Amino acid sequence: MASMRIGIDLRLHAYAPGGISRYARRLARALTEVISPEQLTLIAHRRERDPLTLPGARAKAVWTPPHHPLEKWSLGAELLTSRLDILHSTDFIPPVWGARRLVVTVHDLNFLHYPDYLTAEARRFYNRQISWAVMRADGILVDSYATQQDLVDLLHVSPKRVTVVHLAADERFKPVADAKVTPVLERYELGPGYLLFVGVWEPRKNLPGLLDALAVLRGDGVCPMLAIAGRPGWLYGEIYTKIQSLELQSCVRFIEAPGMDELVALYNGASVLVMPSFYEGFGFPALEAMQCGTPVVVADRASLPEVVGDAGLLIDPDDPSTIAEACRRLLDDPDLRTHYREAGIRQAQRFSWRATAEKTLAAYRAVM
Image 1 (tube, rainbow, N blue to C red):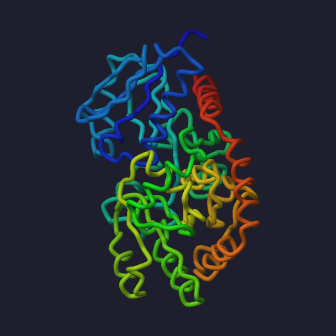
Image 2: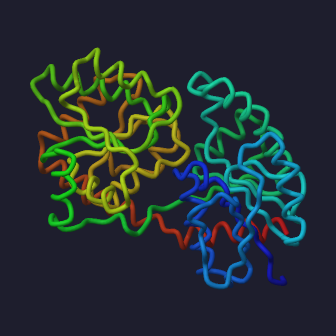
């Protein structure tokens, strides 16, 4: 097979530099380990302040923003001169044209499972796009078997059209010396034994349920600090109302948009990473925490059991008492924390960006 010209859609990073944009940029870097960088075209929006550059790869700056009502047509028009064999739409919405073959990554279908957790505008947008996207795509990638099953059950997509490609954590997430951790904890007034949440502050992450669990712990005489790291999403006002109603102001620290070094330190300093989400397409924070050697408590839903395996404690996100009990077990038992620390490190070693790139490349070749 002749060398493929592959376009990677990186436009989302200019607007929402979260998990999906991190996935797209990290995938592009990993692909250069398995193919010649000259085969890649990195597609960024013209407003991008921090465009990804890879030696040898082509750069394509476009005007079409992600999630625009006309992007299916305008993006394809902007890409026609690139003569791409594959266009990989990393946030699931492909254009009508623009490449010989179109591959999409569907990260999750939370907007179908939990439509009330989105704004009305976002709900209308995603519902209009998803059925068309999976019908139009020549290849469909998903981050987990859970999302593959969702596509089969909710959109009646043949499982033969869907390729599961697990993601990986950045290599910078690892155990680090106390000297790198202590200054960050002092900056945010965090001492030993704190709980950590990492992610966008939005309803599907179930932060109100985590706060209810924190109140249960305090009522039982256990009063750990909770560090909430990430950034505000949509419909996040309930979090502040819940903190006030439960009188937890002294127990919670918000850490908005921490840098990479800060985040590594926060993982390393935490006794437990808690991820009580109602739905996750993959669950980067759980894997990042395990890679740092931090025990994890995660919801028994969607992809999280798949990512964590038997290396963490599973809870019912609808029942704050189960969240509280899992956290209490780890906080009270150093031997149990050591067990899950070691198990988490082993589990995290099963995931690598090299494997992600190889499986993605195989999916590209399968549709040519």
